[in-house]
Image 1 (tube, rainbow, N blue to C red):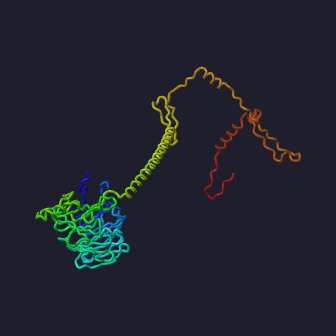
Image 2 (cartoon, rainbow, N blue to C red):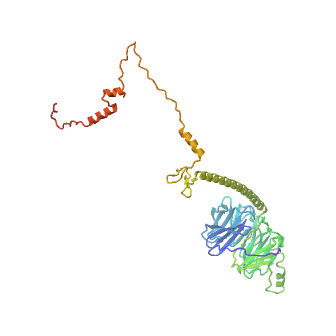
Length: 489
C-alpha cells in the first residue's frame, strides 16, 4: 500500500563479542568486531544471505569499515578496514586478499571514509591527527594534527569537503585546500554523523537522544532541523536510506537534504523518519512548556539488542546490472537448450548402440531343443565359443516314407564309375653308343607260382619271416671283460 515500514529480515551471529563497525554496498555486507575479525556476507535481492568467510589481519578491535566501487549501487572492488591497533588494511573484494597494510595512527583508527573516486581515503586517529592516504600508491599523502582528538570523519557526497567531529564540535573542511568552511557546536556530545543528499547539510545523532542538522550556509548557532526525543537514550548510528537501485538519495528535505533518515539507539530500536514532517510539532510543544514532547517516526522496529552501528544499501539491482543479469539469463537458457539437445542426441546414440550390442549377443547365444531333455541347451557364451550338442543319450528313430526309401535304395545300388588311372611306363635306359647299360638292374622279386615252386612253395614274406626268427634265436657272443686274448675257433 506504499506505507513505509522497517522489518527485520534476518539475524546473523557474526562475532563472539560486540560488533563495532559495519559496511554495505552492492549486495556485500561486512562487519568488524571486538574479536579482531571481519565477517563478510552477500545479500541477494531475493533475500538470501550467503556467508563468504572471515578475514583476519588486525590485532585488535576492527573499529571502522568502508567499501568502494564504481558507484553507490555497483559491486565494490575494494574494502578498507581500520582497527585500534593503528593499522589500515586494503582488501581486494575479488579474492579477499590483503593488498596493503599501512601503519596509520598511534593508539588506533577512530574513523575512516573513502573518496567516491577511490583514489583517496581519510582517517582520524587517537593521535589527534587526520590523515589523507593515496590509495593508488598505498602511502600517506598528507597528515594534520588537530587541537582536539577527532572521533568521527566522513566525506561529503561530492568529495570536495570532509566533516570531522570532536566531542560536540562539528568542523567542515575543504579536501583540496584544507580551509575550514564551517564550525558548529551541537547541544550535546555527538555520537554519530551522516552526510547525504547535498554537501551543505550534516546530520548528527546526540547523546541525549536528539537528532540535529546543520547547514553551513545558515548561521552556526541554529540547526536547520531538530528531531526531538528521537530515542530515549543516545543515538548510536544514523544514515540516509535509498530506494533508488542506482544509489542516489531522494532529496527534498530541509536545506535540500534527504527526505528520509534512519536512526538506531542503544535501547534496541531502529526508526525511520520523514524529515519533511519531523521537528514540526514537538519543537512547538516544547516551546509551550511540554518537556516530554517528541516527534513520531513513520516506522519502527524493536527487539534487536543494543545497536552500535548501521549501514544501508538498495535491495533492487541497478538498471545496468539488471539488464546484464537478464541478458546473461537469456544466454544461459539458450546455452542450456543447446546442451540439452546435444545430451538428448548423445543419449539416443548410446541407446542405439546398446540395442545393436544386445542383438549381437542374442544372436550369438542360440538355443537348441534336444528331444527327451526338456528345455533346450544353450550353445555359446556370447563370446563366440559354442559347443556341439550331445546326442548319444537321445533315443529316437528316423522314419522315412516309401518314396524316400526307394530313392535311398537307388542311390546305394548305383555304381559310381571312377576314371581309370593311367599307368606310368618306365622306359629302359638308353644304351651309350649302342652298348648295354653300365650297371644292370637287379631283377625284382616276383611272387609268380613258378618262382614259389623253385623256393619250395614258400612266398618271399614267409621266407623272410623264418629267417628273422632263426636269427633272433642265435646265441650272441659275450664281450670280454679282461685283457686276455679272445679264444680262437
